[in-house]
Image (cartoon, rainbow, N blue to C red; front, side, top):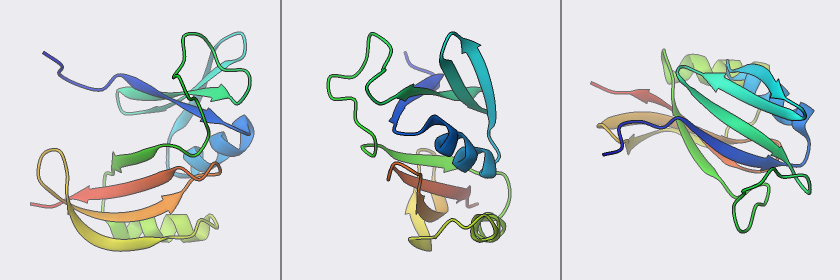
Length: 125
């Protein structure tokens, strides 16, 4: 039985730009081997693979901008929206009520440097 997500991989065009974007969301960066880098949040991580230099094994069609990610945030979505705007990140949509894995969430949407859709969500009671 699967109980949680450990990590996932994003194929990216520019490692530094991707790190900068996700650090603005509150993630931390870790280098863990030759050419390997990951972004950490809570007990999970995102491994970053550079386009054209992906590590094996990899997805059959590893391409930047093909992910649709939803992250739960600690605090109100309005505060996260302010943080995004202050960092020069455009909000595409929201706040909008959605259904998450464990119930109702209030979400805003933006894109990372590769065009991946990033949903940032506040759990609702």
